[in-house]
Image 1 (cartoon, rainbow, N blue to C red):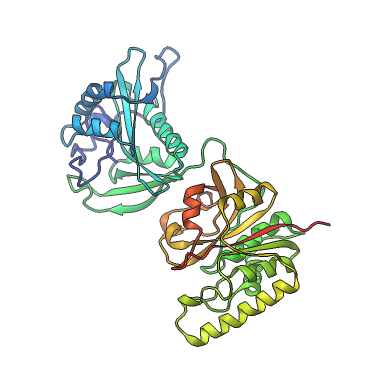
Image 2: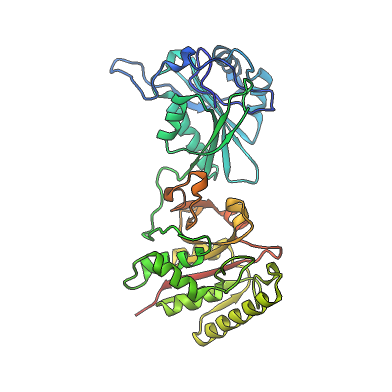
Length: 412
């Protein structure tokens, strides 16, 4: 992310694409404008933001040339961006039709992420909040295309742009040496997108305090809304884990499995319903030690026996997104097993709590907060996941195990 050139406040460039950042120093005139709007009552109205068309190419090239001394986006590249299904260029034009700014967003196929590729504001419009307006419009466009995160890069020495992104709730997720053409380091930022009207279903959020209690935390959050007199705490977190654990997992402390979670939920006063795509013992293919396998099998046999005794319904078939939506519509929550690799890059089973549905996204509480990536609870609570993206992550292991436990308040 760049704040260089005589006319631009910000601009991004992707190394290796022939579109590297300008090497203008941080004292260039583009840094003189404040990040917030200073429009007076007599100032002209803010430029209107709209999708760019091929008719805007000449104006885009002119703004690019006015903003950067080197490594400019070419006319051909602008045309390619405008004609690409995986890109969107937005322009802001004043009342006279002159181009005052633009931004370009890239949408990577098969992911739920978007990337702010380039953004620039003309010198004449600087200081009127147009950069912030373009950024927010980019976020809205990304969310409307079912992206849950927007990423960007910014020069480490670009204090004004960093201040803007931080004020808009972007968090740093990485630092890249020698990123720009002048060898300047870049900081990568990311923001979790929730749209203009975040959904809140009244299910409280709780961040897991260990690496292995995700299932217990999901159950505790469901209990906090639908149970009787439940106060969430680390003590209850560990108690629920002890009740629902399989004793061993691939390594370290044991994890929770669907039958154990359902039995524990039943014993805590909730009605539970198990959905699992495979019969019999689960997770054993990831455990090499025969003794650990034996103990896990015994623990799971006990859970299955108790589930039968409690008359907990069990569906041995893969659940669908429509099953989850129907459960939420009926006032239930759903603890769903997902692949940790697809969520945070670790090949471990992980539980999240589905508790909402806005018509395009399932809304989840993820008890895991990646502190090392600068996340906070706001990044993991009430997180909207597009239906297709959730279907892709809601499976684990080579067999694509699908497991969920639907929970609801016990009648009477």
